[in-house]
Length: 259
Length: 286
Image 1: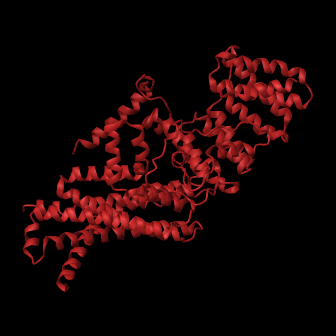
Image 2 (image 1 turned 90 degrees about the horizontal axis):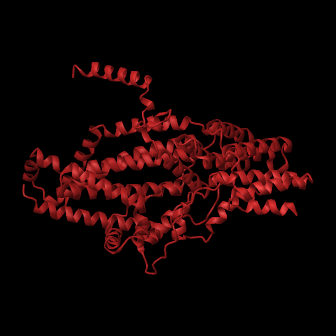
Image 3 (image 1 turned 60 degrees about the horizontal axis):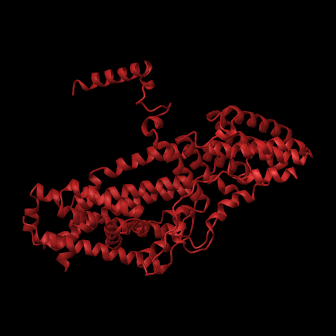
């Protein structure tokens, strides 16, 4: 057990260092500043005092960037190891494939969470500067967002063991973005189309990754207050089960993979 | 790589020269004077409408009313009440510029329990339906601004922005700035002309003489646009023209000059517009 934890720790550290070494986060931060600073200075029709639109844009950017980082990190966990054949020295060490998968996954999640924490820190800092205050929904929003990141890393990880890196990124990003924006409208859509397509939409609704559950943006922007504990547990349980299922599939795929 | 810089310089020069000598007049080039026009072309009006929709959602405290119509979440407010709500504040009872709504019919809901739907309802719907009112309405302005930046000819966006500034924020200087900009971008819009008259009239508490002058001017503009054939006015223009006549008839009625209302009624009827204003003018004849 001690050995397993030590193995996990070194794998997590490796993934963590790799993300921060790539400088993606700094590039994204500069992009965010380039978009938000001019927006914060705008005074529409000369009216001042509006701030919700800034929160809206900032949160949308945070969601976009966190998805970008989570998918990129998750998708890069194994393919480079196979391409550069560094998987051989890794597997020659006294470590099981399962432990390797879990360690790498946890490292990717930790690295993505650190980036997310930085984004939220800046968001909260800006909100406080504008006279805002910390709220329950902000904490819940961060927890949900962190769960979403863990979810997205798991989806990208499964994809990376199934298809090529570019196809994986494209498919994962499309599926998650589509569900994020349209997931809750799928039942309505299923009612408006004819039978074969309607069944497909219903299946997609039943088994698709419902990442829209984690989206607390409207609650944060408009101050609706937090969600009930029951709802919070339901959302986190959904995320945990789906992520666990993805990891189980990834474990099977890695076990069967010929290296 | 060595050729990159000269190529770039040549490309920039070529673009400048072609631009000066009339490439912009070619039919396949999107017309417009800003980067947004060139980048998005006709999509601008869709973006503009989406921005107004966003403002509507902000007015309803962040609820997407189009979605709510289908789902009927926690509260049982009637959607249309909220848009009438704008009118409640308008003392002259003029119809407020409508915020575009979905024309989709409501879809019957399934009776089986949908766990995903349950989660979505609880995460994405507030327990209480609130409206942005008073000073908080300033949160709507960035979306109207973005809307008219995307499409300066989105009259709904201009008039709703004006309404927000004038009636909800009670900031007449801001309302005047919006109107001036709207007029500059849409000099021949009957809706904007009518809105300006409403602004001056202020529900009867403003400058009635100036409002009458503006309404008469707008009336002449309406006739000029169709060459006197009022039935040929576009539906939205016919409605705006009737609104102009409705205001004129109200002012004349208040001044006891009922005789001068008859031609207004005839003109309103000639437009063929399906609006209750025609009936209101007729009622003032009696």
